Image (cartoon, rainbow, N blue to C red):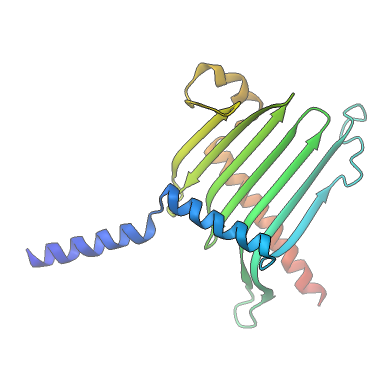
Length: 194
C-alpha cells in the first residue's frame, strides 16, 4: 500500500509539473510581453513586400506582412553541440492588405507552442481566436470572439469564418513549426557568415 501511495504521489507530482493551465500560460505571456517592452529579449524581423505594393496579382493592391521573432540567449552556436543557444519565445505577424488586417501571435515555452492568437479585421468587424495548448501539445481551451461576443466553435454562424480564415489546431501547429524553422534557419545562416 505504501508503494502505491508513493507511486501515486510521484505520478501526481509529474502531472502537476508538466500540465499547464490557462492562467499559467497567461502569466507566462505577460512575462514575455514585459521582457519585450523592457528590451531584454532579442528581435529579428522579417518583412514581406516592404513597399506594400501589388502582390501576386497586380490588381490586388496593397499587401504587406511584418513578422517579429522574439528570443532570449546569445543566438550563437554551442561549440560542442552545434545548436544555437537561445529560446524562441514569441512570434508576432501582422498582415495588412486593402481588404483586411490579420494579426497572429505564437507563444513558445521551452521550445513548445503553448498559445496561439489570431485576430482578423474585415470591414471593422474584429474576430478573434485563442488556443491555449498544454505542455503535451493538447489544446486545453479554444475561444472564438466575434465583435467581442464569445461564440461556440460548433455554432453554424461560424461556417463562413471557418472557411475563410479560422485555422484548425493542426494547421496552427504546422504553421508554427514552419515559422520556427524559418527562424532557426536564419540564425544558422548568420552563423555561417561569421
